[in-house]
Image 1 (cartoon, rainbow, N blue to C red):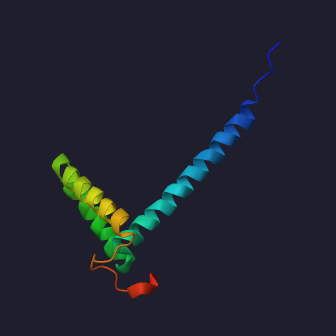
Image 2: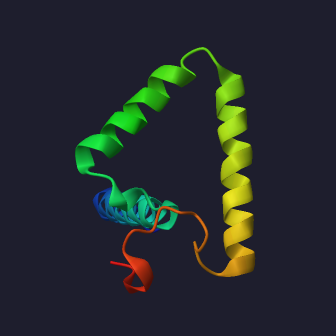
Length: 97
């Protein structure tokens, strides 16, 4: 005879996994903001930049393609250098904070 499934336990485990994935995504987005130097902008300015990008991309997939190429190049250069030196956006010097 088969063991009955504990649907409630499975659901709870899936919800916990979803919570962990959301937290990891939030952390990664914060790391991305820091890596690009966007953490030097005010929260309002950063939100404005993101909103402008979303408005600009509406119906223009070529914009996303250009941004993707630029982002890929950024990460490839970062992997080679090991830091974001030379971006011109780091106002905090070597402290990183």
